[in-house]
Length: 592
Image (cartoon, rainbow, N blue to C red; front, side, top):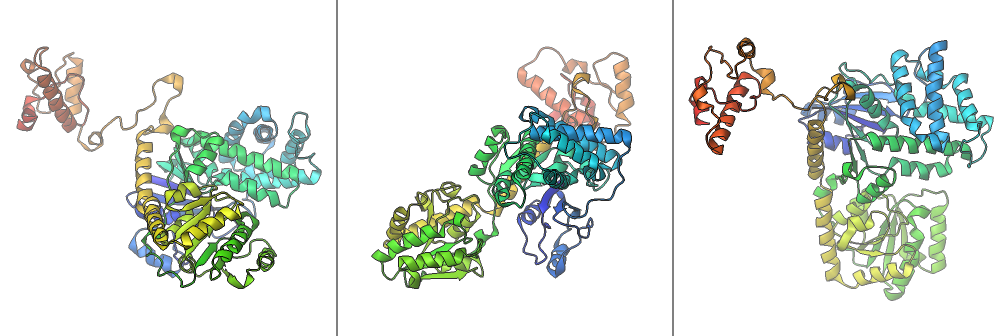
């Protein structure tokens, strides 16, 4: 089937040929025809020919056909286009007014979807949406709704500068509605059998429009929720609070609409699944598919270091709480004077590394603490330690934990986020911000080599089972087939709800499209006109009425129905109810 893979922010293939999640999905599902639709961060050379990046990419292209790559700039210079006329400008203004009201007025949130789809329809008709969104008319609509009674201004009253900044940011957020990806021509989303959105956020906009215009279903995969990351990131955004509140309202409304319209949601963990349900996702359409990693093929770490060593890895920032690891290590070293602590990671907050070094100096353990910086690889970091320690206040993604478990080292982690789900019974979990509990868990493992080895092996096996690549591709193979099998074969031609039943998926077998029906159609039409229930075969003979009576056993009737199905399939149609086998069809039908 034809699958449109929608992503945001970065090119789907690394120039160094390292590959990523999308690469592994495409490599594992080679029976499907993939095409990438990338919302790039800035302007760049648009690619729609699947050209490889660098020598490594060219080598990969020799092994298999590369999928086509379609790029569209999400930021930077806006797409070219003329301004709408007077009548069309009023239509744009009405749709934009409805969308802005849904963002600013709690009682009108249901208007987000209709306003969004109306803007997409207008943009597809004349391509004037980018010019309208940066026009004075759009800014006046935004200012009028924002300052009118009933609008949510709890974050502060908007100033003129806020209106200008917010209008520009909304134009960037709505820019995918103007992408040249819609339609049923080759390369258009309407020609795809389904869309697969990776990451959520603005990447879901083309999928929403494709479903609205062409009836194409879509799947959403999130490894780390986009909405949650926006809430965390906008705390330090260089905008005033009214602008931040408006943009967060847009992402919240977009997330709710995406979860409402998606056929299937595949979060990367049960922890993310709970967040999605909190945002309105239907539990019946949500399935956890863990993020596979090729690190499962990596051998376990080598022998442990001679000195008992705790290894910590992550960004040096308050959220990772390396200070907790330092305070716990001070208690460990009081019991084991030969113990060491190695911290791997780069400084994410300016001056925070110096702050942690000062904490170690104050605790009297500076001589046993090493700030090793960024390791050459994660495997090298785990090999430096006897026990792996995680002290984060929030563990949003499971990949780092799983990578540590794949090394075969025993893991101690704070019981936050996905830690309990990933580590399970193969490691030790302690409460966050409790140095005494963390130190006790570390001492228990450092003093018991047999328990340490047993937990390390169990953790490695658990991670290999949950985070292998093959289960991921197998899960999406089933999801794709299930989704397409439950969707109308020709959604664009489906009538309205009041005009009759919608087309059934796979209502005709494959034989219907490949057999020669020219010989059987006239004979069947003649039989129908004569009012007889006996179909006429291609050679002009009819079925034997003596073999089709109301009597007989249930087994006889079932055998007759089965034979009729075989003969009817040879004619290129499904048998009618109660149709008997055709004796003229040969001994095969008699045997059935």
